[in-house]
Amino acid sequence: MSTFVMTYRTAGSLRMQPLPAHTLEAAWNCAFDVAERMGCRACSFGVHRAAKG
Image (cartoon, rainbow, N blue to C red):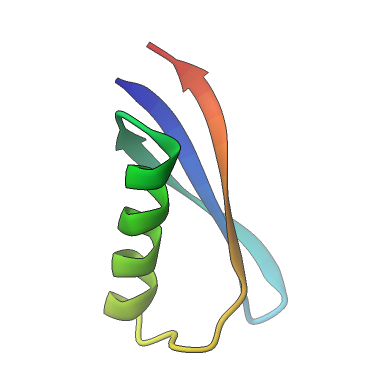
């Protein structure tokens, strides 16, 4: 399993959310779920590999 991070902005600050996932595709799916739970339908975010485990 690899660790990916979701980066996003809230109120002018850059935030990061760890996303443990097996693939980049799975990390993106998780990031979309996180954004929906935050109520952020049109927010901007990215997903990047942080570490490989």
